[in-house]
Amino acid sequence: MENKRTLIAILLMLIVWMGFTVLFPPEKPTGGPADQQTEETRAPVAEQTPASSIEGTADAVPAPRFTADRQAEARRITVRSGIYEYILSSQGGVIKQVALTEYQKDKEKVTGAVTLSDFSGRPGGSLFTRGSDGFGVEEDALYQVNLERDEVRLAPGEEVEIVFSTRLDNGLDIAKVYRFSAESYDVDFSVEVLNRSGGTLSGNIAVGVAEIWDESMAGSYNEFVGPSIYSGGELNNVDVDDLAEGSKEFQNNIAWTGFQKKYFLSAFVPLVGSSERARIEGSGDLVINSVITPYRSLNPGESARFDFLGYFGPKDFDILKSVDHQLSEAIDFGFFGFLSRPLLHVLKFFYSFIGNYGVAIILLTVIIKAFFWPLTQKSYSSMKNMQKLQPEMQKLREKHKNDKQRLNVEMMNLYKEHRVNPLGGCLPMLIQIPVFFALYKVLLFSIELRQAEFFLWITDLSAKDPYYVTPLLMGATMFLQQKMTPTQMDPTQAKIFLAMPIVFTFLFLNFPSGLVIYWLVNNVLTIGQQALINRKKD
Image (cartoon, rainbow, N blue to C red; front, side):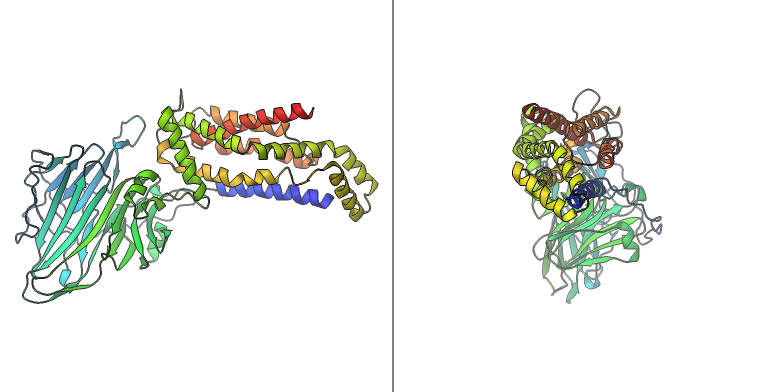
């Protein structure tokens, strides 16, 4: 029986330290400097003095899809709504910058709105177009634009269609068509080709999103930042450092490809029949996610159209779910995602009534504690009963110290006589571990907590407590909880476990305050429950 007790203690220690490894791993070291080579094939973007704006879509009448003339110089088109600002360029027909006006870079709103796909001041952009063979359009080709003015303001419910078109020297007309909706982060996008030559033209087109990479962007072990693709029914995250060895190709059931940050996503969705394969590659300081269309042949007068969907917005589960195309899989809740999603919905449900995510976290913690109350009650009661048997167990150890087999038999008889399960104290606690990991992911990665205020000095639940008040309180309550918890450990093991509150306190100093609040409230509730159990037993 002594060996069993030692084994149980070792097992519990392993569980705790494995939890540390999963929850609090060291940050992954960043790689070497990125390749600094630039793409010389791109011409610099010409500067354009903005013209006066147009309101709504009334004046944005689409021109014919194809025009024979090329634009003399580059133009920049701005599309604004209540939630975003897009800047597009007729040089390449690309998106130069996306600003998400509902999300600020900092809590004080000093540095402006969050920007995605920011190519202002340099060549290139997202939703670029490359072609092969007869479809060989240059990436920086100049396009005609169907709008006379350079700015569009969309009121709620309004939409606009912007067409970039050009004709290649071989007689192939190409049109890039954007459709923006005032209240959606997703953008309808299509590439249309028409053969106006006297012979057959064949080729394919690559379209995708690009991101300027800097080593400072690299995330930690638990926080992926970089290119991703949802292919073959699973999410594939590609380490940027691995792209130095060559591009990554995917062909199996491509749902979307794009670039992830902790709270935001730039993604590109090929719709039915528009993709043959996808590629993720590095080029200088760029990370490029592209989709290659099937190879097509067009006879004179024939045309083809490839439809896509762009998404530049927050990693909000409900928004991504409404857009569909498996975009919600970009939020990686981990192995226990099936528990994380309902917990997130409950958290948002409480917030819809209270309007404070800090209070919503407290209520969710209370609900979880109430749900597991019977199991916790059983666990602590079992440990309390085991503690009462300690004097008799010690007598048996002294009596049969030279006969381990007899000692184990007598210990089992003692447990049966008093109806005590030696594992009853730990098994109910183990059942709760999946819920903890699931809630940990929710509180760590949910954009809802970004810059969300709680009260007084806690003005951002996704950031650490600036004065470390909650982590210190958490450590104190954890220490008190351990002192109140019955234990059958020997003095050395007990001292090791009493060191855990100190370790946890230091680990939680830089954790998001929302996660610390959950742990603090859970400790307080556990102390209250343990006090009730001790009072009943006494």
